[in-house]
Image (cartoon, rainbow, N blue to C red; front, side, top):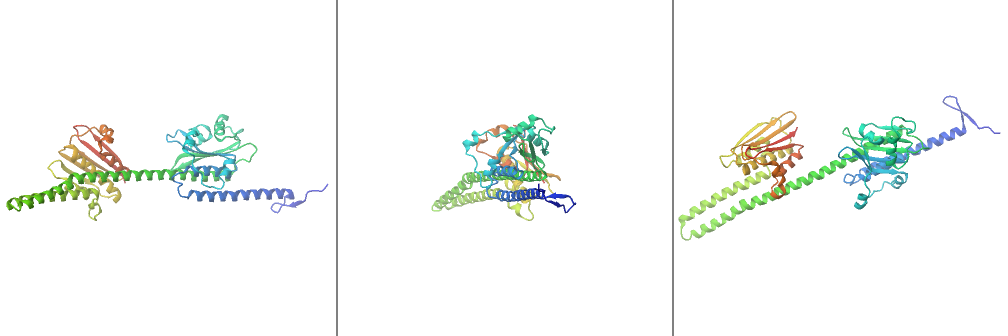
Length: 443
């Protein structure tokens, strides 16, 4: 009977058969092919992540990440979960098997399901702490279960939760948290069935890499949504300013100019009969013109404070300039105190000025106050600005509840301005006890 050829091992002098060499060569070839596929998948996934529209709709990319996790770890099922807003449960964004992963192997764009289909398919959920994925979300630690039959760290009921979500009976499980800014925002999980190779160090590295990318996708989508929200708020504020300016132009300078024209026409007619009365009408027209000019200058200043842009101006100078312009009557008397040695950026100062401007305007229009105090106080952590008066005051909750029917959005405008600079706005008032509006802006 022929014997198997034996080759002396070069490294340690150990006899190695030709069949052993062939099997080792086949193992290395398969390993190399797997590594090449992993590299290609990562390159395609990165190209997809950079495609336009990903930030607007991250779910297709999350599905592709889950499919890539399944292929790169040679698993039979995978799932990608995100924490809900209440942080009490994981919501499955994608559950993949070998067939679905093969269908998305080209990384073509995956269309979002129709609205009626999305409503019919209720999202799968795992409560925080339930199942292996729930444990990872709660602890923030990865979990590698090489054999669910022999690993006693978790019960069979725990593994059953993951199996029900994944649609298989898992023999081995690997789950890693999605981390962003130190917080867990989701979990990426893969599973093997019985009779398949278990996970190795490369599988863990791959899954952690994909989890990091999924976390970045979610964070970028949230940033994108916030930018859209900021844009909408800015557009709303601009529309409100335009409406208010149009109203003020109509009831102020527009009517005053019409009155000036009528006065001059009347003076022209008087000139034909009584020259003495002409001087009085011309004097009236001049006074109206001066009033109109002041009103237009105030409106221009409301739109854009030039003092904020001058080298020797800045926030305090702009506020003082504004107070000088609006102080038309003896009351309310304006008191400005500023401890503001280290100016903030022009963008932040412009928002702070807008809040002060709106608060003082409210005092002038509604408070019937004798005094108005404007205080700027700076600390190493924040700038605190307060506008308070000793006027009539009002019911804050009632005003907020009536906003939609009042046609006035002063408080909301101040709130939007504060949000633009990550500030905190508070309004305290009671009928008969004045009003205090405070703004805190982090440095």
